[in-house]
Length: 167
Image (cartoon, rainbow, N blue to C red):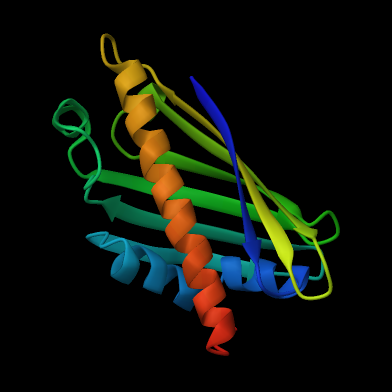
């Protein structure tokens, strides 16, 4: 089991960060264009005064996974859910592979904390577990590497969109 925390500074206020983080156009640009996923769809997005809830489906090219991991997983079709509590400025995400969901667990807690008038820290705490005999630890390490790379690129794209006035 791999547990790790990633923190990125985003150049906007908390409300703007939460909206952009769950924005369908932003996520399409991030997953299809920046990451090269072979499929990515926003299945639903609802927003109330209290929360933002999103559901996505996708297919990852597994481009950064090592050969043994690719042999085990191939392209990973998945569904992803994210619920963000606006008052607490935090939320939960869960990614579920469509094939062998009992063998993989990927969850994240997401929080947004102000660090000044025009910046926030976007903090993601991940839990990754692969229950595959003989290579579970390898898969967890590869998924951690992938998540770290994607979080870094996602934070950079958030800041790019903010700087370009897209948010």
